[in-house]
Image (tube, rainbow, N blue to C red; front, top):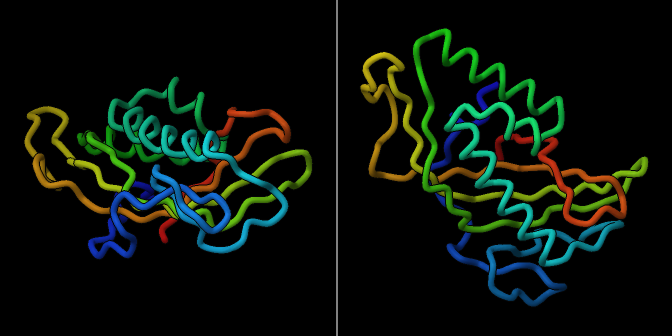
Length: 173
């Protein structure tokens, strides 16, 4: 599973759109895609989603397994570890820097089996470069031009525990 190699080049969301609060959208990067069901999200939750996007990308780019483990579910961690291992085996290193959320649309939020879930369409940019591990030569990507990516990120936390979201799924949009 190539979580971070699937890049979209045609942005479908407006840059710097706003957080969803019912129908209005105050500053921050989020807008609702559809009515949320069963769980009300706050600006604090939305800030956590944006923070986790940056943290995950940074930890992935630094091959920081401990940080990745702290912010993801075991299933997502296994996919990330597999990708990092594949890169290392093939003498590559994926550097991801400058991650910036351009837009986030909450597609659904719900509670199930004592867990809160939220799925967000994340449209972001980052400088994503694949390098040769031995020489540092750029194998793919640009060190100056950010790539645009749109992915669906699902977050989970125990119901009623404020602010302890983890990434539970990432898929192409």
